[in-house]
Length: 216
Image (cartoon, rainbow, N blue to C red; front, side):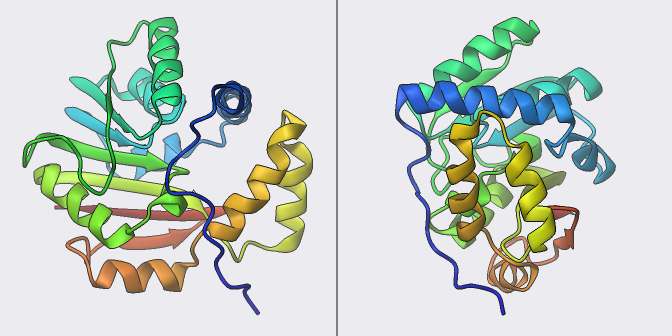
């Protein structure tokens, strides 16, 4: 039986010390290739003007940009401390990414501003996923594609243990568990999407998470 979902946070990571630790964790995930980038490309994300929702330290969008060379990369991030880390990382990548402080439920962009919207590891923190899905639909241009990847709460215990033990720095391990406890199952996400403008999305599972993909 799958445990009841336990909300983790809807404010992102605000503490500067924790942000620096999370940056080390995200770098580790990047180096292992556990960041969803290849899946995003496989889903049809090709370039143009790309928006990353909840970029954190920015590695997913930056790695994606290395591979597909979008016209522009914009990030919408709720944490000022995380936003500053993302800006530093973009400078290291020599990619002119633009990061904006904002909430995914009311993003500070005009309608039809982007050709693609991506997000990795942020969905379980969204206070109102349906509203966020509708915002993604709003800012996408007609024909634009989206790909949202995240953890999955009903992951097999052995896989959970494997990822837990491989998580570095070790200080991030408790956070991994709380994030997993806040994550959604495939059936839960499918039901939420049914009530949003992304109702035609395809939802699939992978080794440790889920993927929501589709086209406006």
